[in-house]
Each structure stands twice: as structure tokens, then as C-alpha cells.
Image 1 (spheres, rainbow, N blue to C red):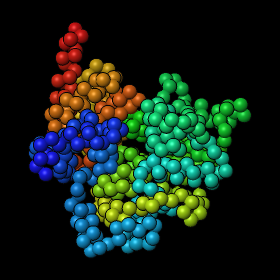
Image 2: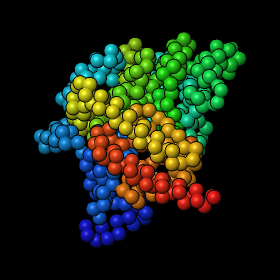
Image 3: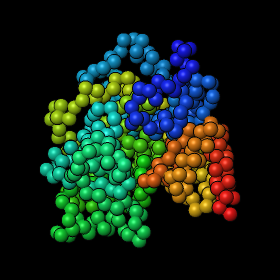
Length: 428
């Protein structure tokens, strides 16, 4: 073990595929993590403002989830059960019904898919096509829904689309809210669907993120989301909300659409659905649309039993009453204030996002990358997003203590000073 630690990075460069990505910017050997902190092999501490790309909304190694999982494993609980009835699955479904669906007036059925968000999106698109008998899906500019073939067709990012190697089809791309200056995107969509010569085939579904995570933290207005949902239903299409990154409290409520007058036909979820960073994805479906036959969409790992254990604890711990949501509201205000002050240090920069899914558009991918790299040198793990990676994006665990948040913001501010001031002086 000691010999391996002497050259900890060499094995990854020698054997791991060139497809690796995050590790290129954070080239350390991480060995421990607790709450909002990560530690490398040398004992260096890092504040985590990435949180597994919003897969760790409740932090690293939550003690209650960990204890429940250890107890389950130590007691020879079911480790893999296909889609058999298990006590772990039943416990999760009851908690999800009692604390999430029921209080929000949602009658959705829960479909467990393969353990990735992309698989949930694939299932949602397939289901909409089966329900309606149509093939076309309307998706939006800068949307990111995954990189498997069906989901990739709905994803806007050209770099990821280029990796497919074949044509992507079955999706019509429309402008997202405020995508084009002076253009009412919802009105344009409505007009084109109503026009027999508008060129859009009757859609099976209209699919959107209410806040586009990888697309650059573009936050749709309540009016836009409500209008798109109505347009979908007026045109006989299903309304799908991809809540894979924006869900599980990231925008301040469990679902990102809760403060809007919409009831999606389908909701896709993954990332923090397990609560513990375990692979877990699901599709929420209005009962009248639950038309797949047995195993028509399946997967050997549909329903991660260990994730059921931790997800139940996460729901019972954080969502059994309104205290956690109220706490998030205060943290969102703190984030807005801190990031606004940092944005003022960068010429032309501005805030984007909503809730605890916010960031700063600094105008260039090169500058954003330099800021994030300097922040990492100072002990902060933070990443970029957007079509040109121009947004410095904060996805800290929602459970991050206020003092740790303040420390992280201070590091980010110092990184900006270190990078922006020399560049400004050079330009003068």
C-alpha cells in the first residue's frame, strides 16, 4: 500500500481511459470525506462546492444514512434484488409517499430504472412515445439530459453530441426562456405548433429542466414553465420535467417546480435521490400514463437496494417537516449575497441560477477555469458549466454549515482577486 501511495496518480494516467474528466482539474488522491469536506492522501482539507455534481446534496457520509446502511449490510439484508419486493424498497416507497408525494398532492407511480439519470430520461422518452403514439420530443437549447443515444438527442451540447458517431434524431430543439434577446420563447413554440406549416411534428412530449445545470444555470421563469406545460397539454403531448440535478432540494424545495402551478406528467430523478451518493434513478409517472408492460423497460440494476435504505433515511430526516426547507431558504439568501459581492469584482460578470443552484457568469471559459483552478489550490473544489464553461457554479451540499459556506465564499473571492486583478492590471 505504501509503495502505491508513493506515486498515487500514475496508475490513473496509465490505465484509466482518456474519457476521465473531473480528475483532470482536481488531480489529487482523495481518501476521506465528511459533510462538506474532502481530504487527500496527504491530509490536505478541501471544502466541497461540487458535491458529486449535486449527487451529495446531504453531504458526504451522513451518519444516519451510514448507520442504516451498515446495519442493513451487517444483517445480511438483500444486496441485489432485481425488482423483487424487498423490505428496503417498501420502506423507501412508504417514506416517499408519506413525506414527498402525498403532501404535494402528487399521485405519480414510481418506476425504478437503471441507476443513472440518463436511463431515467431514456425511459421517460420511450414512455411518452408509447403513450401518445408519436415520436417527436421537443427539448430546449442548452438542455442536458444525458449522453446515451436517446437522451443525447435531447441534449444540446455540441461537444457531447459529437461523441455519438451517428445522427441524433427524434427531437426538435426550441429556444429556452430568454435564450434569444427580445424573443418570447413560449409564444414562439406555441405559434409553431399551431401553424400547419410550422415544421414541428406533433410532439409526444415537451421536456425541460426548470434550471439548466450543465447548460449554464439558466433558470426559467415561473411564467415560462407554466406556459410550456399548458402548450404541451393543449397539443396532446406529455410534459416532462428533468429534475435530475435541480431536484432533491437543490433549488430550495424538494422538486424544482413546486412553487409553480404545474403538475408534470413525468418527472425524472437521480443524483441525490439516494441521499448517500449511491447510484439510483427513478421516473415518476401519472397513473394514466403508466403503460409499460412488465420489463418493457428494464435493467439488471433497476432499483439499488442499498440506495433504498439510505434514500428512506434521507427523506425521513430532511423532509418529514418543513424545517430543512426553511433552512435552505436562508442559505440561498446567503449564497446570493456572497456571489453578488464576488461578481462585482469581475468586469461584466453576473449571477445565474436559483436557490442553492447558483453561479457567476464570468464571460469566458478560460477565466472561469483559471478561477476554479486557483480556488482548488486554496482548498475549494468548484467547477464550471455553460456552453463555453463560462459559469463558475456552486453546487455545495445543502447541509453545509453556514461557517463553512462563508469560508468557501472567502476562498472563491480570494481566487478571483488572484486571477482577475493581475489580468486587469496587464490590460491597463
